[in-house]
Amino acid sequence: MGKINSFTDLTTWKKAHALVVCIYKVTEKFPIKEQYGLTNQIRRAAVSITSNIAEGFSRQSKKEKTQFYFTAKGSLTEVQNQLFIAKDVQYITIESFNNLTDNSLEVGRLLTGLIRSAQSK
Image (tube, rainbow, N blue to C red):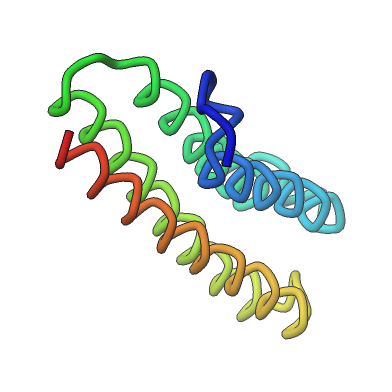
């Protein structure tokens, strides 16, 4: 594993970024009436995950890093909730739901590791 010089070197950010891209692609198929509703909400929450990882990476104190990583985890939980809604109103297939949920759970595990790492430094 190489040296981590940027937030883009973090596996957690890379996996979360991939999740954001998938969220954008799947929400393109949401009804136009959801443009300012669920589509906007889930996209903003997904972007917030990677944005908070990036901002946390740049912080110097353990407390600040941890807070941003916890905020990212909160945004991830929002995305997970919104995926259930999208599935239940049949905006996404069960297959898409399962894939996105599996990806989100992986990001959650990685975020937990990032939080533990930040807390121990």
